Image (cartoon, rainbow, N blue to C red):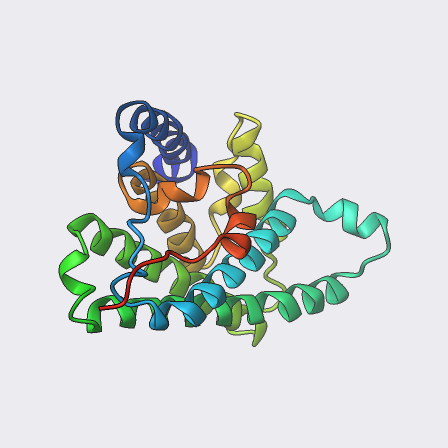
Length: 227
């Protein structure tokens, strides 16, 4: 199964992500918004939405740097391995706390509020569950690695990062994932499952425009009349 998970599944996920999203855009663009719920429960959205998206941006940036920047580049600019991990943890742990904390706050709002729960679809429930598992395994794996419970000297930049770059180069090196701790293997698989689910859920709203992240912080609130 290693050949499937680390050699075939990434391309299956990428293909479904790109083709599925393009198809949905062409056939149902008007239906891929987040279906804003401000008019149902506005006050409970204000703080969690900021926390969640700030954590998301920080976590995404950390993944991009950690996965796409080769180890020899940081070594070349005299950043030691110890210094790199201190920098990564100092940014990654706060990002994980914000991301996970915002997620739990939004889930409590959605499933505890009598107005919100009836407006939650099956696809919403599926993607929330997948995101929850993805967040827990990623954040949990980072903490376990930080306190040394995943073994001395384990470094994701020597296995997961080069594997991902080999996938992008269309020459996947499956052997790089052989000794990766199970919690990170599950995290990577869940990330690919998220990509597969992406075109069929409300997650597509994040690519409504290249400036979508900026619009989140500058857009006006929905205006509606009070009862």
